[in-house]
View 1 (cartoon, rainbow, N blue to C red):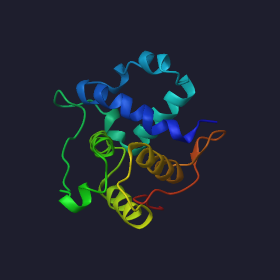
View 2: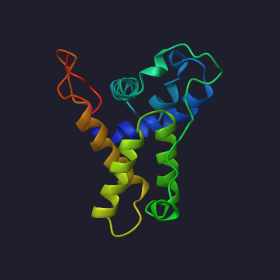
View 3: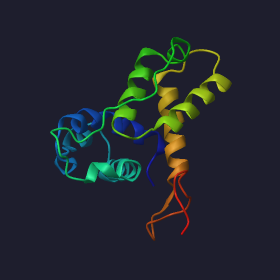
View 4: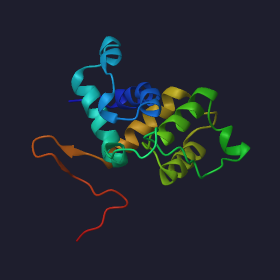
Amino acid sequence: MVEKNKTVDILIELAPQLMAKKNVHSINTKKLEGMGYSKIEITYAISLLLNRNPKLLKKPKSKKILDNTFLRIMPKEEKTLFTKEAYQDILLLRTIGVIDEDDLNDIIERISVYFRDRVSRDELRQMINYMIDDEGEIDFETGVRLNLKKNDQIH
């Protein structure tokens, strides 16, 4: 089974490649393997990313494969909830489509309620790992998601 605390770390490492490449299939995972991540952990992280941002599979019309729009402007009070490194992680994860506006609101609420001080990079990554793994739990034998996502509809 994949360790939950490594998924966001892998996605953060992949973010620069995703922002620079035209094709998601040309991601180089050798560096991640050299950092000690297993192929299963890397595959799980990429699968989770594609599940949360399926647009990455489509052929881009422009040079960039990512939509860099970030609609929500965080006021100074919200920015101060994060360390500089944690805030950078938020921006990267939003840019590659791992978190959306609703997720960001949820993160800010959790930090406001559960943390007295600014949230560190490690605390933030742990929180996001919990959020994305909890939402996208998959039965590895059948490949079926066990929970509906917030935007899923039942037909």
